[in-house]
Image 1 (cartoon, rainbow, N blue to C red):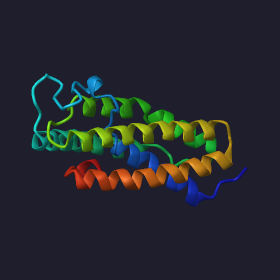
Image 2 (image 1 turned 30 degrees about the horizontal axis):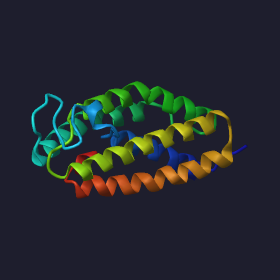
Image 3 (image 1 turned 180 degrees about the horizontal axis):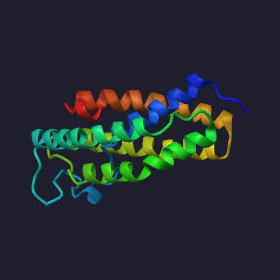
Image 4 (image 1 turned 30 degrees about the vertical axis):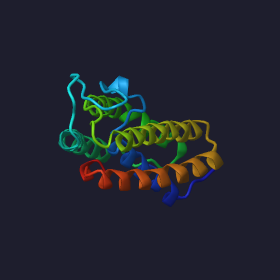
Length: 168
């Protein structure tokens, strides 16, 4: 099965964007917060502190993500796409852990918690795209890639609206 370069390139871009937008966790207790907000060290986290901390994490990891992505050959097949995603898993996991450590602010905690939940869902969907590629299921790969791309657009907009464009 042949993939069009455009679709595969879009999926690669989506993978990079989701890695970049990986400021996520759907369970506030795992990131040190509580349902009403809080930081990893148990203190109340203001929204401005959350913005600054999230931005700092994204600014630290963005260059590393871009460098790793640039060092890997662009995938031209489903099998290569699977290998490409696998090569980035360790850095992506590290990035997610750093963001989770930020916590949830007291103010706008519902919005931030929703962003975390949506990002976690998008990351899970990316895993499904990877699995479809590994199974060489082009139809599922294309359909899931489109869903991931739309979710990424929505998440990027949410990051900007929450004042963390570095995480876009």
